[in-house]
Image 1 (cartoon, rainbow, N blue to C red):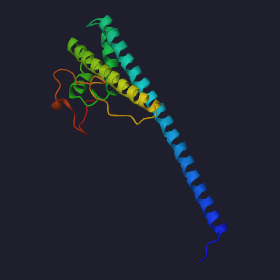
Image 2 (image 1 turned 90 degrees about the horizontal axis):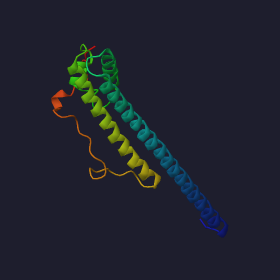
Image 3 (image 1 turned 180 degrees about the horizontal axis):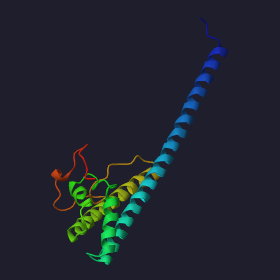
Image 4 (image 1 turned 120 degrees about the vertical axis):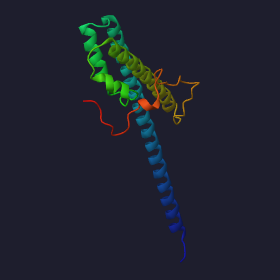
Length: 173
């Protein structure tokens, strides 16, 4: 098989077109991924910040209502309902046990403790996502966040792993 100048030129031009298309697609996909990351981390940071502010507001309302009042009992019920949707509290036996208990000062104290924990967790997640958003906006991959950059989240005092509900464990109705 003999190559002619025309066939070699055509092959080189074809290869250049393929390489150019590949580079353009890769650049486009990279920009779209970065845009998606910026949107995702921005939404996550805002969402976690809103959760933090909501729990802080509920804690403040409960403290103003005072222990033993009807308003405090209603706010405590709302807190326990909200706690079911937060990562640190949704698998806690303590939260599950107190959720359907009758109103009492102890129940309010448990609700305040876990609401503060949920608020701290939300603030921690908001800060993590804000760091990852900053990384994405600078065009670098989000990096592992250390304790020097963001204060690490801690479960409440006295909590241990035996308080954690097992997957599939029946919750109190």
